[in-house]
Image 1 (tube, chains in turn green, blue):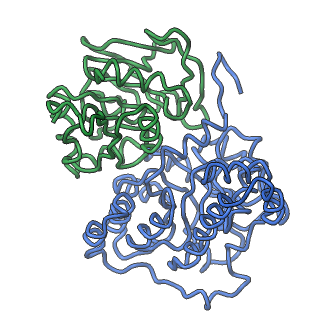
Image 2: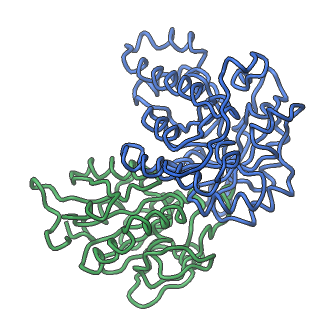
Length: 200
Length: 298
């Protein structure tokens, strides 16, 4: 899968998990950046992708659907064969190895403990400028019932935090953000994912 | 509001919350037990209310915001977002719901209106609002008042999808028409729609509403949900359709599956098998003009 290098018609293919949530926003941005977006609903859809974005949405709903469609295992093996993964918000929860909340299906791709709704309910949702490792200028983070990593293990590089709460991090072939770059006009995180994580 | 460089209650944060619900099903629940069933079935949020619309119809009298005690119990029972309904124009019910930290307020025609002229000024709130609409003009008036999400009204509590179809076609058709007009025609169109010009112009340029558009009112089967998605809804509210049916657990799961796979008739067929009795539906002709909920709101 990942070995085929995600190339088709000369364009690299990047998947967006399209079970639930704001996947269309990611699809539109990927089009702008000149890669071919693929909506992923079944394990077969991962064929030939260079990377996959797990979007914002309800992590319990998406997790259950991934489990029943076989995508939970399929994305895990995609990742362990070197495929790149980016989880935003719900996707960051799903990428974690453990949660402080009630049990739910997780991909467990990153050595981290996640606190769901870590900043509180919707009335506490916010936007603010963030300093991000490797970015020259601050990035406006849109946080919606957002999670954070309470603790990260070896192999996880913290890219941004708010008062000790990790809101962006990466591993070798994985990126997570607690906020929603796809709800802004700032394409830097999408470019970062394609260049630094997918190696395109 | 700004606190240590953090802005809460911005329109981006409010409408963004609805973006995260897209492709999902929001279910009406009256207690914590039903909320858990909804969450287990894959609902993206629950709507807390005193009685489901079918019972409001049967019960009569004045329908109000749910008991705060019930809302708190539901919030403790689930991790998915909890929404609750306030009466049209009843901004103090909305203030109470905001104080309870519900995730979304539905200013809803299903409850008895508190103001027959004005809706709530939703810009005053940090909590986001969803409002019902029967056509494009109504949708844009609600957005003008600060609504961060729109749903078709349909005719709640009937188990009959016909009104939701009418409203969704009217909204989507209205949007399509705007995209065909020249710039010089938009002011006259804004006048005839009774909608703010700036929003009319935005919709004409972008070919969609500036907020997420869900459907509601009469959805009772997986095929109903998929029908509304194919007609252009971003997601589905199901009210009485689940807990007034023979097997709520199965039906809830089936409606979620059909909403995800709305373009896949085989998947919808599979989801629709062996669900037991659907809720009893009512023909629109049986419902007197004065009993129609969709005519509430202006």
